[in-house]
Length: 144
Image 1 (tube, rainbow, N blue to C red):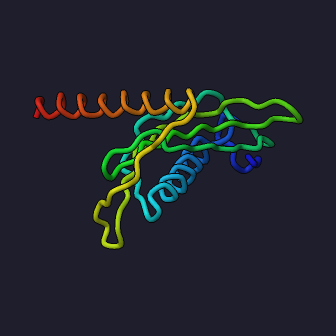
Image 2: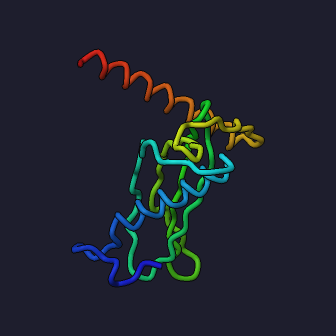
């Protein structure tokens, strides 16, 4: 629930509340998939689609959309329920988590096995983002 005390100077809900929710839900999803602890490696993409308002009930859904050997691409989708029936998309985020052992060293994770067309699309999108990360990293390294 977004409370009056959660408002910013513009009267909408503070974006930091959504950011914290995104990281918490992504962490829970990554840890469940990794069957153990996972850490945030990067918040790759965050888009705020609509503001939240006092009285909104905010919910988030997250899923593992791709995996590497030790990393997991997590998609988080946030919405707000207003009144009895209105549901508004609030934000979408894509984060990368790494599974770690008790010493903090990266450890292997299981793959993702999509079953529906929407899941296949999410996996394809995660592969595109992963390739983009590699290209960007290489291009920036060339500038150093």
